[in-house]
Image 1 (cartoon, rainbow, N blue to C red):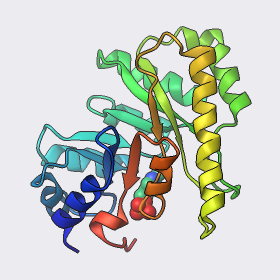
Image 2: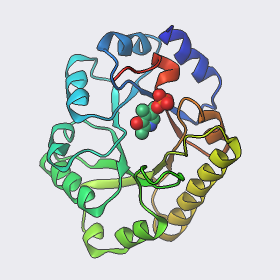
Image 3: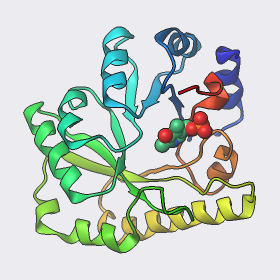
Image 4: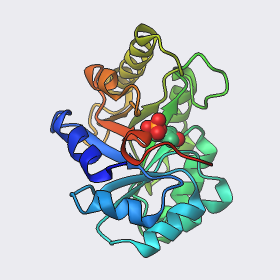
Length: 222
Ligand SMILES: *Cc1c(COP(=O)(O)O)cnc(C)c1O
C-alpha cells in the first residue's frame, strides 16, 4: 500500500470544502506517520484504548476523531483531546460527554448518528428520536457539548442507487434539523458520510466529512 500516494490521490479528487478523516483503526503509528508526512492531519479511530495510545505517541497537531460509540465508562479517557465524536445515538451518552467535557473545561463537538441503512445491525437514531432529544430540557441544559452535525453509514451493497438514496435521506435529516433546531448555530454544519467504497457518491449528496480507511491503509486484518 502506498499510503502517501493514496492520501494525495483522494485529496486531489475531492472538493476543498470536504474534509478527509483518515480512518487508521487497527493500523500502526508508522502507517499514520506516512499519511501525516504528506499533510494529513485528521485521523479517526473507533476504539478508545487505541485512540488514547496513538494520541500519546504521535504529533500533537493531529486532530483525532472518534468514529463510533464510546462506551460510557471510557469517555473520560478521550475527553481531554478528542476533536469530534461521530457516533452519538442517545441522550445518555451526550450527558456523559458533557460531564467529562466540563471536567476538562472543554466543549466537545459531537455528531448525531442516524440509522439510514437497511441493515438493522447498524446503529443510529431515527429523526423522531433525535427530535425528542433536542427538545428535551435535559439536552438544553448541557453546556459542554456542541452538536456539529449528523453522521450515517449506508447499506453494504453494490446498489449505487440505494446508497445514494440513503445518503440523500441523511442530508434531508440534516436540513430538517438545521431549520428546526440549529438555524442560529454556526457550528451545526457537518454531514459525515462516505467510506472507501462510496465516498464519491456521498460527496455528490452533500457530505462534508468522509471517513476513509482501507482505501488509504489497505485491508484490515482484525
Ligand atoms: C471503519 C470505518 C470506516 C472506514 O471504512 P473503510 O471502508 O475502510 O473506508 C468509516 N466509518 C466508520 C464508522 C468505520 O467504523
